[in-house]
Length: 334
Ligand code: NAI
Image 1 (cartoon, helix red, strand yellow):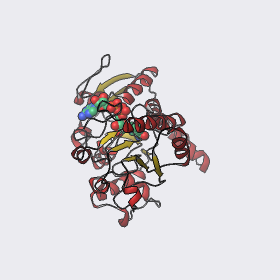
Image 2 (tube, rainbow, N blue to C red):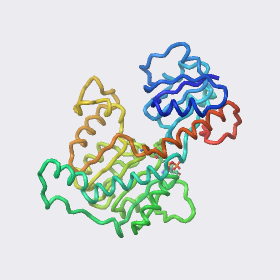
Image 3 (cartoon, rainbow, N blue to C red):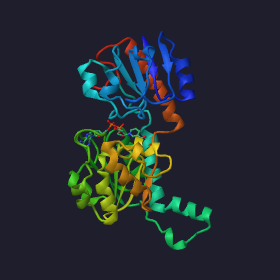
Image 4 (spheres, helix red, strand yellow):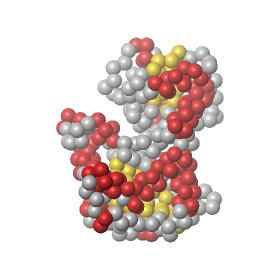
């Protein structure tokens, strides 16, 4: 079998070369794949495609690979893959669950503590010699109510850490786990001082936080999003920040974030904007310049431990593809 890997960093190539102790032809590319990527015949003939979230496996991309049998995602999320096309063509899709549950949960608190204690503002001020003691008063997390949307692998770790801060935890999930304090979606919006989004992006969670939702929130709520940008309607968030319903938003993910990151000069460049992303990109540009918004470029997963786990799981998933059975671990049920 032949596997083609995109978004590969040198240490990942080294690891995969060393640990794939089974017969497999491997082709590595450091760049992502999307509909504009030029592909040669050898690459197009592969049976396995492996990508990170920076690639986009749309129908337009996938239909070029006539022999494709397996997609091996080096991520938990799979909103960058056209799963209905994969199903139609009997392409099996593996993801990499649990590779960084603690990494991402800890990052939720890295964002939250930065916001609650104004650490970045204070650090910037000391570097610029513009210290102003009136600016740094924060809030305690102790006894605050955190609403966790999505109590899966990451959400449960967010809850574990929140309890160590003595926070009151309320949760919302479509599927409930034993031992968690679930409330209705509206009650979570109404009662949370902080909302952490930890659900996947799907048809039901697309713009889950829309105008209606923001209008039900406690005034001054802090929003933390490490899941997917599209769970929030970015324009409505912008409005809620302007109206002071939301006091602060810290986000590791943004709607149409690939377009945002390509924009090196941090200004609107019409050539970089996909038609469907125009409004989001415009709003994101406004958000980037707001003092009560913190945006990071999708790095919550990025720890040494998580990177190694991703590679371990990828090797397992490659093995499972070669000796494929329908009940294979990490197979996304289409
Ligand atoms: P998971 O599958 O273990 O948990 C997701 C939870 O969301 C489940 O309990 C599920 O029932 C719930 N859910 C699904 N649909 C829902 C709905 N309509 N309403 C409410 N809850 C719903 O996934 P995990 O591992 O906890 O990851 C969550 C998300 O975090 C991923 O889908 C991914 O988008 C994001 N992520 C972000 C990373 C980053 O670096 N920023 C890295 C890894 C994941």
